[in-house]
Length: 383
Image 1 (tube, rainbow, N blue to C red):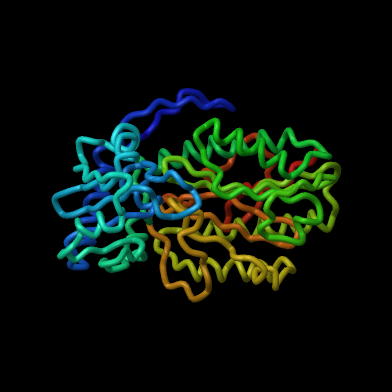
Image 2 (image 1 turned 120 degrees about the vertical axis):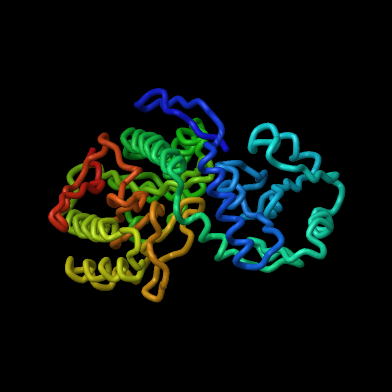
């Protein structure tokens, strides 16, 4: 729906908007119609925020961010695109989130029962849904597959989001001081991202020993002495970029240096093997093998290693039992970790090879040689 053109390159990235290009629109409509035909459905009901954003090119159908389900929904048939919304949400959605001339509005009063209203529109129809709404067939996994391959315009939006988010997060990290509280860093990170219209849907901050103790450290009032980890998943236009950055005050100790060199090598192996058509389980197995080769054979069992992303932080977490393969132009975020350190960025599996979209020249890098190529992974910033 809404796309942008970068105006500048730097810490302040301006944007202007234009409508979602016609090719992206046609492709998404084609995928929906193909699914309806394949499943023998009359319509598709999209309630979840990430699916609404995908189909509309970034539209926001939510008010409350603490749930997957949005405040309004889409009912898609072979011939119609219907917006079902109450009289509070309809004006904003039509004006700011979708191409209003392309959707038929079915409005109801805020005081009326939403469930009963939706049921009245799907009664007597064979309808698939992304959340198992009463009277529908839950085909959420099949709907998820529609989002796997990004269109060319989605790739461009994603690149810009990756660049903007990483610049903003890294600038916050570069300005961290010993004695800062985790919550203060979380606040500054949120402020930097929200000022660009990026919603931090995951924000983890850990100081010193909390990095070793917890893999998902929610920020606290703990003050930083020597070491801090910043983990972010930021969303804009429905797309989500994930990254992790680490800052150390002083010289990184040898033990931590060994761990970080190992985890960045593991990350490199995972990224380098993320190629269209390659089984995700096979990629994970190569990562596990690298954990063993670098001297940390059990660490992969202490935290998930990541997986496909895009319109969700992870569409699913890859395990050795996973049967799916990497799709062309699919977004992936691996996040290998060893107690006390971690490596994470967001990539797109393009035909020419994986592209890291959340990397900037402003952050120190480790050079990792793998498969006759030198890869760059984020180092620990020493201050």
